[in-house]
Length: 458
Image 1 (cartoon, rainbow, N blue to C red):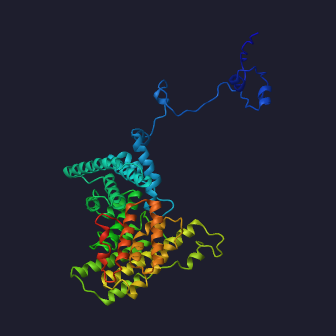
Image 2: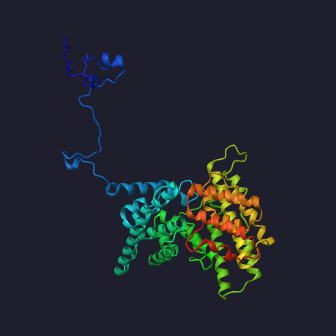
Image 3: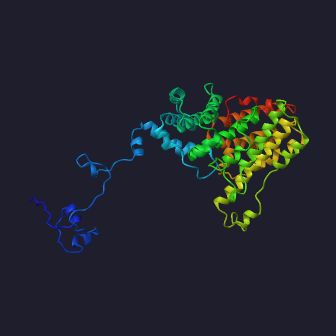
């Protein structure tokens, strides 16, 4: 005998209606819901919120997407993946802080040239990261991105208007793309992007105007651009693009390095002092100044390595007993270690590049191992060591013992496994070539000649 379907009784709870069983209408909870442990609800109509607009609903009742959502919806699937990769994987590699400023993703949605540059950087780094994807796609995107940059530059030149912030962002990303990721490729043109970024800054009123009006992410990129400009001139010769006093203004904005506790000391102070040293050396090379023992002593004094003071304990940054040590305290220790490594590297530069001392001279060697100790003692999981490649290269080329050379190679391998930059592999090649030569008379510029014109080292 076929059992007839049980029809719901008018006024049944929604749980019984959904299961199409007979409800005894007992309130506040019917017997069936109490037995099975279901939620008994006698409301006339359950409310379900939905943010998806429906075609049948009047326009005033539909949820209107924001401008950002509309822009993001217009992206291709591969562009969305590239932006996500850039934000989550590549952008954090440009800074030592655990919580970097937000990347320029939203600005990329408004400027096509910046979107192309961001996707190019992300796709190229993904190829280096995976090691199995084809380089053809990034190469095609590079051509498209360069074409968009030229078109934007021509447009601003013809109209006489100032370039947009998006164009400056794009050229800076192209500079780091070629200097960090593609420095070993024939297509790299780091010097051209460097000159382009400087020209755009000048059209915008100079670096100070850019720092005053640009977004936070641009401040961070400009600080890294100025840093690599300084280290590149130290390794390859020339005059830095920015004056020493500029570093004090850069330090007022978002930067790539971690600051010391309570802003007691900043790497910007050391970079400004190093900039003064490099400008002085270029003046000597151009005949605008003579080497002075007093000036050398002044540089020795101002570049004396800085250690964390005891006042940091009193301020509560470090724990006196070590049991309450926090992530902030370890970052502060690494920040001071990074600062000292740059100071030791600058003193090696002073004795080698300016004074012309040999590799094995005592004044040079007294800073080699301390510089390496600063880097080797940085926490294994700290991001600081990823941005200490310049002092690692300077000290590594002058280290004498095989044991310390192995330690340098281990650090380089560790950094490369984390960042996957082609510039890191190039550093290892330079170190191995210098160690094989075993020359004590090699001068400063010849020591780093194998870096080539396109590598950017920080």
